[in-house]
Image (tube, rainbow, N blue to C red; front, top):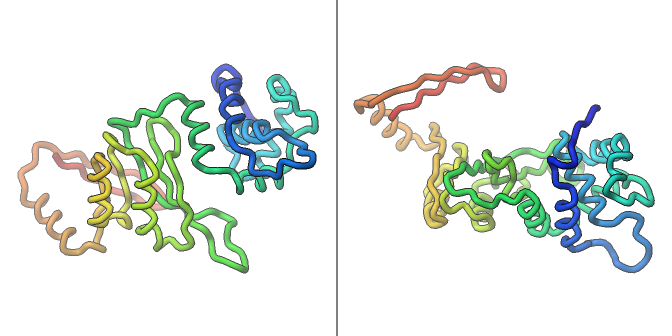
Length: 242
């Protein structure tokens, strides 16, 4: 795996300063081999370069060790994958989010798109429990995640979305959700948060779906765009009316 990254582009020193403000969840007595800021900075840089798991983060650190030494002490080398996992499992999510916001320096989301979607965490299933699902709020224009909630089952996404909306600021943004999240209470929550919404509508809301279809089939529209693309192994056709 090849990694390319530039110090100036990432404002590494600012990232280090923000990472040092995060509370260390590890026991503070005894000897800690790696500073918390070191672990966080290596992980963030690795993720930006495409790392998908803790093994990738460790691999990134070892492959870019000489570059990392330019701004990190690394007295005890690169942390291993288990160290990254143990630390990130115990970090305060709100503090990590604050670190990212301050580093990126762009909190403004007015007029932008906040995509709320659920994804299954690959490899999270074991003998004790099924695969975990993460419901996240993603700002397309900023390429950042505002917040996440882990649920045990995909069906629990419906109850997780309102909780996630309580955690993030979406005022002035357009919130998009797939058909599973097309619920009256969720729409009301978005309005209460002073945001607009664009919700997918499918046959699971048969009456409303039929009403909307009837409206567009019988309404005179100013213009229409038809788009076809291949995605997820199928041809998708989308029609836009206004």
